[in-house]
Structure formats: C-alpha cells, structure tokens
Picture 1: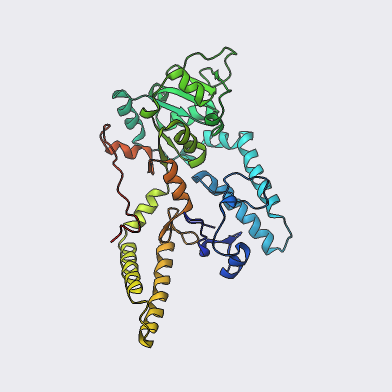
Picture 2: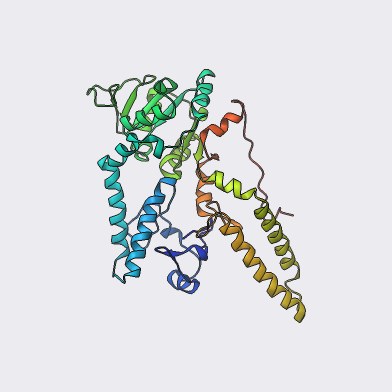
Length: 368
C-alpha cells in the first residue's frame, strides 16, 4: 500500500500479493483510513503490528518476490502466517547478498547490471580540479567497489577520492563510535592489524565509523555535501547528528518529471483544479439541478484523480504524491534531504558556487 504524509491510506494502492484489495476490506482491516505512527516503523519491533517500508530502488525485487509468494499462496489456498513469509523472503535475499553470488554476477557483467553515466568521470574531474575533496562510504566490499568504479570511471578512479571506505555497515557506521578502520591492500584484501592513524588519498579502508572519520580528517560538517540513495541508511543520521547537507539520488525522478511535463497530464491537472474550484464554490447550493450537477462533478473528479495516478504507475501512482498530499516517502525525504535528483551529474549543469535557494511554500491560510 501507499500512505500519504499524514498516515492516510491511498485506498486503491492496497494489494494482497498482486491482487487489489476491495475498499470495504481495507477499511475493515485497518479500522478506517489512518495508520498509527506506532505501526509505521522502518524496522520491525516486538509489537504485533508494524509495517516495513520500501525506501529505495534496490528493494523492488525483494518486495516483488514477496508479493509473488503471497499471490501463489492465496491462489492455491495455502494457509500461511504473513510474518513467517516476510522473514523467509527477506532472509533469503540477505543470504544471496552475504554469499557473494550476487556481487560476483554483477562484477562479471557490469554492462548488464550497472547504468553507466557517461558524464560521471568528467563531472568528478571538474570537482577535483576545483579543489573539492571527494569521499565514498559504501557497504560493499573493496573488490566490488573497485570493479564498479573501473567500469564507471576508469582504472584510475581512486585518484578522484580522498577517502574510500568499504564494508561500512551503514547505518551502523553513522551510529556507532567504537569500530575502527582497517588497512586494505591494493586488491581490496586484508593487509595488516596496524591501527589506521591517517586516511590517504586513493587507499581503501575497511569498516570504521563516522566518529573516527571526522576525527582523522577534521572536516567541517557545514562544508560537506553528502549523496545517498536510502533515506534512513544514508541520510537520516548525518542530517540529524552531524548537520551535513544531504542530497538523495532517486532514479525514478526522471520518469516522474517526464510524466509531469506531458500535455495529457497537464491537461488533466488543469481540469481537476478547475473542477475542484467549482465544487468548493457551489457545494452548498440546494436546488435539485445543483445537486445533480455536483454529483456529476464529484464523479468526474474521481475519474481525473485516477487518471493522474495511473499516468505514473497503474498500481501505486507517483512515489512522491498521494493525490493532493505528499506521500509518506516524500515527507521522510524532505525531512532528511536538502536536495534530491535522479543522478549526481545533474549538478554538473550548475556552477560550483551555485546556491539553491528554497522556494517559499504557501501554507493553507496563505494560498489564494
């Protein structure tokens, strides 16, 4: 299901497996449209009711697999406990990651699995030439990072970065202060047991913590712009505790912008706004003709709302909106990210000293 910024369910997005759930069943299951804050936990807890959030692009296959399993059980009338299915699917996906098989498949054929931004190398060069210090904090192994970066940037990719950290274990990297960095050799393997007392340009270091990173580099938090693709694992802690300027990378944004700029969608939105203006103005007229017209307007409004939803994605609509409200994802995104973009290189269109001034958002009592 999709939930808006105020915890209201977007009814037509609720599915059991791959099958849409009827409105009456949704209202019965959740006793209305509202989801309490206690249920909207990112991580499971000991309570009997919680919801796991799909927060990044890489979770789509996992959740699709979960939906397919549930759909199979429902169609075959197999009795099941949802929590057990959830844990079995998520643990299976985690096992694939930990086994290294997924990484080996990607490393063996990066052209198939990794989108290559042809502007990335020149953009990073531009930053380095102008005195910017770049760093990478990744949960992936050193070997995986090296293979991916060679594909994206070239064999000399390490020269771009002042700090390279592998197996960081985010978000633990940002939350714990006891874990120290370890030396890695040129191939990304274990080097020695000596304590890391300084971080050198072009070298890969394993593990560590944010506390140790800031102690060794002595960077000013106010001068850091940090990009991540996961609202919680990447952005939340550094935004809350360190005051870093954070930016989210959201690949789906390109599709959203494309749809927003189509003639069909703009026409749909114009009709919807005008229709809602008329409904607001004439809803209290009591004549029979007016009530009949209002009934038709409301039906047309519902049709236009559905059109605006399916223009982005038929089952769920836009990831940023739940009709007129921001989605719950957008609320969390705006809380932890100052900027968001579909790819880092989009910033290459701006001078390096460009300042993004926020737009003033009209409050309900200010909107004309």
